[in-house]
Image 1 (cartoon, rainbow, N blue to C red):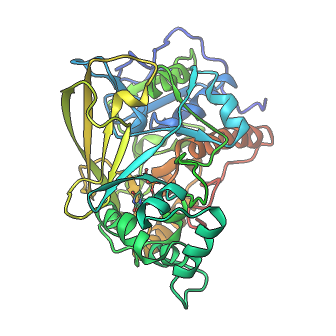
Image 2 (cartoon, helix red, strand yellow; image 1 turned 180 degrees about the horizontal axis):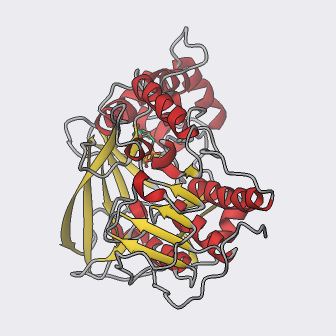
Length: 412
Ligand code: UDP
């Protein structure tokens, strides 16, 4: 370890992540400041604490775990995904091994249902969806030829969501499952959105209705907040809940890792990057409300995008009552919680300004979904956070500094 590393923390001012609400930094000047106690911040904090750094984590909310936060419902005892469904999936063995250090992961396959035109289908689009939708009994090869014949002519390499859909599934499936849902979700026409948004979903010519194509897919038995609590429960880590970390606070730290919104770091001087936020309307019922964890509502006559029934995310538990969240999407205002970065041309040119400003900062590394303004799933966030921590340690050993970004936010 390089000489510029902080000395070992004495461990006398240990604060448990799940219980700390301290707002006063410890007397001795800490070396690492981390803004945000989501997966990015917690993984970096844990790794650098293990490396002997003294880590201060500042979290503006009253709880850890960011938008992955899970909590038991006081009425029913059901584990709620407070900011909407988070299903863990990854094909990265490093990430899979890592997360299982912090909880037991119970196999879970996300099988989404979708309602369109008054009928229920399975998503992602698979052979059952195709055969039920078109009233056919096609086998995989015929289904492929059938959809290929529906591809709109004249579409080369698709760049937009709409072009991607019309190119690979044709107009009927696109209009039934994607066009209205996407307008509700993003508040933009699919012809304005990038093809990458649709490419998140597989299109299958067999009966596999697994929503994800990852090697591993599981749910943590005790939820994500328990995992992040364990990551942060370390003698070298102190968590400050309800405290927003700002640019003015960076003095005296050897390194800052900022997982808040990149534009907020600069006080939004160039303008605000656009996000979609979500509103959840919770309802409690007896028994089983919808028989599945997630049902999407693809018609524009229904204002919500989907309904999540939380007890189905933990099928190993038994509950007589049930809690559902109806999910509505809208543009994110200054006081709302940001969820989905919009990343259209206007936002990307604004982002380019902030990336340039960030690159001129010294000793600040921007990480995670908000820090890099990218549509990142949990497993990618964790992989990048591990990489950032590793690079920081390597950079310190060589006496070098960490760049502002480990992944260029403009590249994807
Ligand atoms: N989508 C859709 N209809 C659906 C499900 C998804 O149009 O029933 C579109 C929508 O634009 C969404 C994108 O596909 O943003 C990616 O879906 P995913 O399930 O990955 O969205 P997330 O769970 O991240 O909200």
